[in-house]
Image (cartoon, rainbow, N blue to C red):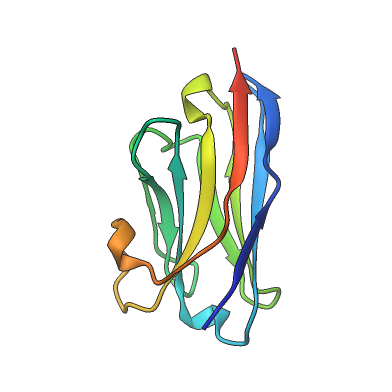
Length: 124
């Protein structure tokens, strides 16, 4: 089992940057694939990006490709999301999630543990 706590959200102007962090408890963080999802008001939760246990394999939603970067530090039990050139449509609650599956997935149902979320608001 793992507990996830996100931080780093806030209010930023369009074109700005934010770095989200997700601190994981437990000693098995390095065995989990990890992902970031987001949910805007009135919309379903959507996939943003994911990374395998080693950090060598990553996936991105087309809407964030080239602007967002996912990374992890297994020694620190921490997942990161660097968000650059933010747009108003990036406004959402951002969640980190952990998956016990062998293959990295972009589907919500593929993740077993979720954080409480952190709000990101991008003003125009």
